[in-house]
Image (tube, rainbow, N blue to C red; front, side, top):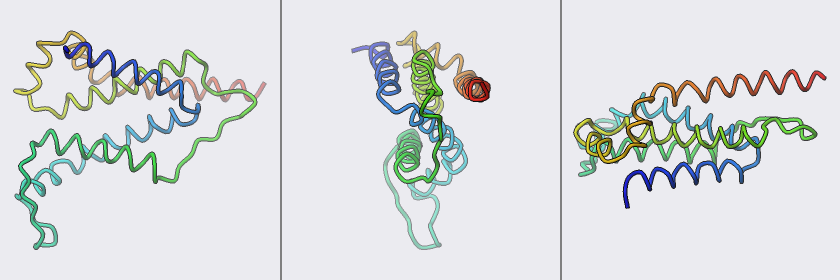
Length: 171
C-alpha cells in the first residue's frame, strides 16, 4: 500500500467520522485538536527530553525510553486529543430546531480536521524522515505544502459558520 492510499483512507474516515458525529461534536473535536496542537508544541520538547532521559522530574524521576521524538510528540498529540474529547468540560450549544452545520459543512469540517491532523503529524517528523514520505506521496506533498492553511482555514470556517448561525437565529 502506498502513502497516498493510506492518506486517502484517512481523509475518507475523517469525513465519515464528521458525518457520524453529532453536529456539535465535530466542532468540539476540531477545537480539541487545536488545543492539543498548541499544548504539544508548547511542552513537546520538555516531554521529549524527559522520555529520552535528558531531564529529571522533581530531580528524581528519570525515564530513558528508546522512542523517537516523532513517536513521543505524536503520542502526546493524540493523548491530548483523546483526553480533551473524553474528559474536558466544554460544550457547544446549538439550536436543535435548526442545525448549525449543513451537510456540506460537516463534510468540510471532517476534511479540514483530517488535513489538520495529517499536517500536524507531518510537521512533527524531522526533515530526514519527512522527505521520503513527501517523495512517495502526492497527497502528503500537498498537505505539507499548505501546512499553514490547514491551521487557518478551519478557524475561518468556524467564524463563517458562527456568523451564519447567528444571522439565522435572529430570523
